View 1 (tube, rainbow, N blue to C red):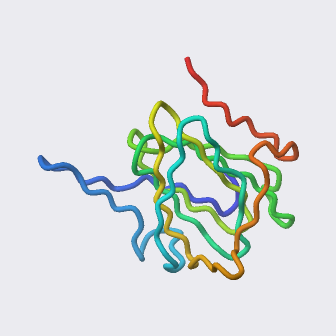
View 2 (tube, one colour):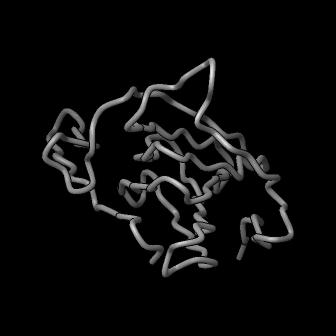
Length: 151
């Protein structure tokens, strides 16, 4: 596991009306502070990657469909520098992925429907000076295979 990444199985509370899922609480492991909440959607066959933040911690929860989320540690001072982790999350596996600053990340949809991720980052998005640094999804230095396997 990449240093500082936290994967948390989420509490799902079902009843005869449906279910409630706690995604992030102020007393959750990995919670730092509240910046904002946003929804991001990726269509099947599309990859949203790579980017990282210098200050921001992200908290990803897939609330629709299934998503393949990849993380790559490119932090110079990290003991896990060069490591890549892959997680498949969504309605079949309810988890929160906490992504620390400096870890490159991205995602794609798994299956025939879009994947929707709610992110609760520690910082608000700054339109004047965004804390977002991008690399191409097919960056050869990372060398990640975004193909979704069919069996």
